Image 1 (cartoon, rainbow, N blue to C red):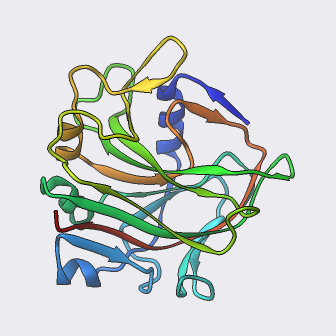
Image 2 (image 1 turned 180 degrees about the vertical axis):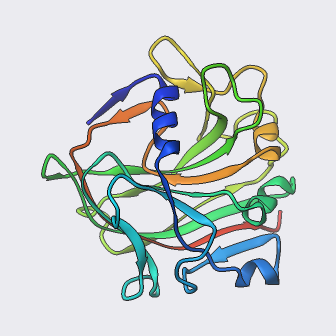
Image 3 (image 1 turned 135 degrees about the vertical axis):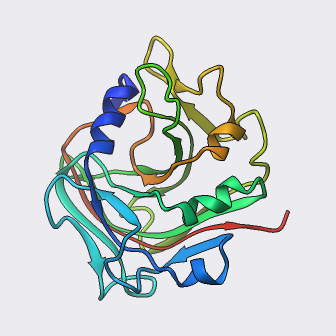
Length: 235
């Protein structure tokens, strides 16, 4: 289904394919350290998403947990992905305090070559300032869950808590991007730390593209995303 490749090529291609999707400002106004959207405001500035074919990803007013939600339906796809670049959403990550990223998903169909498959759901935090050589950005990332319509039907809540954003080393379960070994497996460059990537974070990505892998365009997706949150939590 997938194999390692030079991550620089995959990342550049992925970052180039974006379109605007929605966010809700209500939670931002109430608490700047807790950002949340259930996509109730429809299409408004904020979230971005991968776009290979127009109309494949939209705010669905009829489905959600509860409705509306982001709905991605696409055949012949390589993956599914959304981004957030607004400063308000990045502020909780830069506060140096424990922070949690959470979202709900529902996989209605995830196939590869017509057969059910599973795709990792990744949260990646990207810093575009002073990018490493031959890479568009440095990032830290972790697998928070899975999209698997056959074995994980219905709605699921996935989350990851960063207990110490000031840590110089990667927490357990986290990987880095910005350099790679001879097999194309990514890692964080020697001159970058977990803490400085978070301090300089420019983008949150919720994606099925695990850094260091390439994916065939023979996947079919029918998935929903809802109730995305990024917020500081009690230690």
